[in-house]
Length: 191
Length: 191
Image (cartoon, rainbow over all chains, first blue to last red; front, side, top):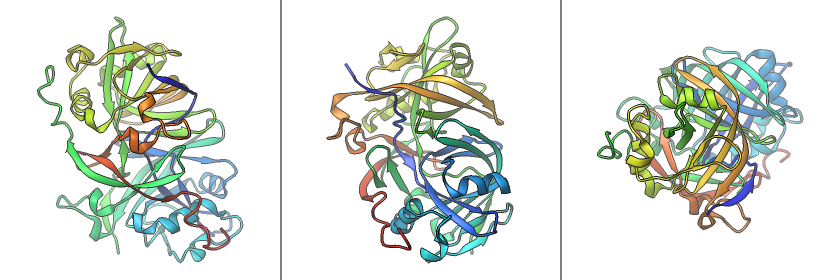
């Protein structure tokens, strides 16, 4: 017997992403968000949801572009700051001691110090309520060599991304490997 | 200097969700997906992306409803099985020893043995490529008492959800708490 919690978007865990954009004056901005996910493998698409009140909201609509940057857990102070402060009021890159580098394929800034960036072309923006759902096509992914695993792609244990727990107001780190996917479930039913 | 990885949706970590639906014959089905995320806080909405070839794809469109169930890491074998097998070919609930319980608010089955379920009304379905992006409004969340924290909401350390690392084909667990959100970044800039 489960307990009713009412209508709540309690999905665990949420990723912690830093969204980069240029505003109308050309100033680079970065804001932290946790409402994000992969939307399609081919073409590669991701979603990120942003409140209309955020400075980045208009910027993404105007430039039709954004970056999604993933920080390491060692960068948690900077990540949290980028979620608290507003780019309308201050130069967040400068305040956090971060470098804005123009993305290779889209009109948006990447956070140079963060180990992974996804450069996104805006495909759609849908107002759902307090958040607008942005869908972006990833035109290019770039990562620091230090976080790449044997296969040439990022290794989550080297990347050490932050997780966010909705409703708890806390960041967590990635724990140990549990099992191989598309493997550990074989032997059940016809699998 | 970062290395180019080409166009790839490398977002870490992805959550591991089990999507419940009834097919045209009324048979309950459950499939595992990792392309999912929160889309809006109010009204509470989530996204989940599913390939057109999956049995659940047509079922969700027909009933305009689905559930998103979160398992504990101890249930990883069942979760992985639900991602490998097809509901077109077998009764996955029965094969995995799981119980389909009709959701309280939508026409879709919940997985009774999994600790958390989000009952969703389909808001939209958008074909992006190999995946269709489903946006659902969460009409009701329900959880086992055992995973609830002090505030009456799930505690991620009690829920112990699985994470998925894109490109690595592996599940991970949630690690230790890193810091408080909206707090650890204060003191930088004007925050």
